[in-house]
Length: 150
Image (cartoon, rainbow, N blue to C red):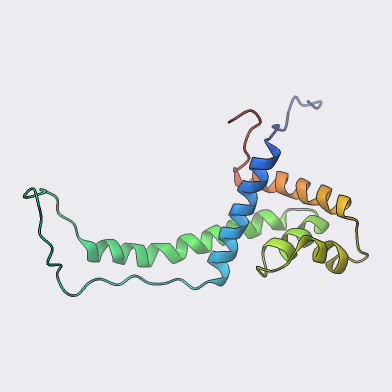
């Protein structure tokens, strides 16, 4: 606890890292893979309805229209939220997260700490910077997994 009585939460390191990596993977998918619009079936389905009426009505066209209009905006906001959280990190943490998790699928840790950082840093220093960045991102995105929650 500090002088103001504020205590940062203790988190489950492994599960928090998994949550942050999953969020960054979702970001990468939303950012770089195009949105596939859904379409309605034009022909009706000729399937028997066993057990009689369901007394439910559905409007598939309306559901698809809502999805098609809302999903791109939801994805854009998600990406914007991640980018904003990353932009608040220390420059070294920003560089690490951006180069390792927000660009290409096939970038490895050793490439980042040996070739991206100038001058290159050690694997241990890289791990410390990465964990601190994950911790801060988990708190900013509200995806931190508290210790002992399991």
